[in-house]
Image (cartoon, rainbow, N blue to C red; front, side, top):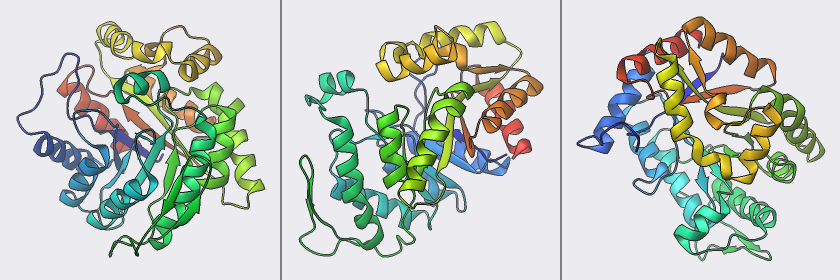
Length: 312
């Protein structure tokens, strides 16, 4: 199994903030890497930058692949994000992966003051401009929503090969754009049924039609190995409730036949979590990234990482 984990510097729920975010996260990554986990991923939040943190961690833990899951493109420009991604690729010695997302439109509108309209067109044009930036360091593109022209070469020494780009896509239109212009998809909360019935066939067909390689399907799943199942499930329900009101996630939950986002979290013994992980690979995932591993505390987080390292 190709397995990674989401590295969360801390949770806004039951866990206090560390004294130093970078030091804490580097220690997390070093532990995960030592246990055999292949990659660590960072969600974009308002209290740290995912690309910057990934670059610092990947630099400090050589050979450990790092990625973002995922950076919303609302409020970003492809030239600036491309420069960040190239810098991270150089810093990590070629072990960086860029995950981007459309973002929750209503949430980002309230936070950033942008409407985020015509999201699919925006995604298509953003990827069209981003690709040459990562490959060559320059771009000359003018679309309806995105204009990107580098006034001078913007290639970062040491940033080749270009980092892969994954799109957190779950709707058919976004999946088709990801298949034709990106290296794969990075869906969160997409259960086995959604993977096998919608995500895998849609993005694979789009990639084939565009003459691109078979796309990566990197499923991001909440999971904890613990004996405190009821308490951990309750925390999952509380902390993942945010997603239940977002239309794209609501559609996935309905397809999976669950009412609560926390119902999709893999919580239980080593054998139970292993069986649930296998369901994702059987559904077509090429990789699985396990997040929310901190929900039952540090001892069970370590127990979870030990399982992921063993399975990897």
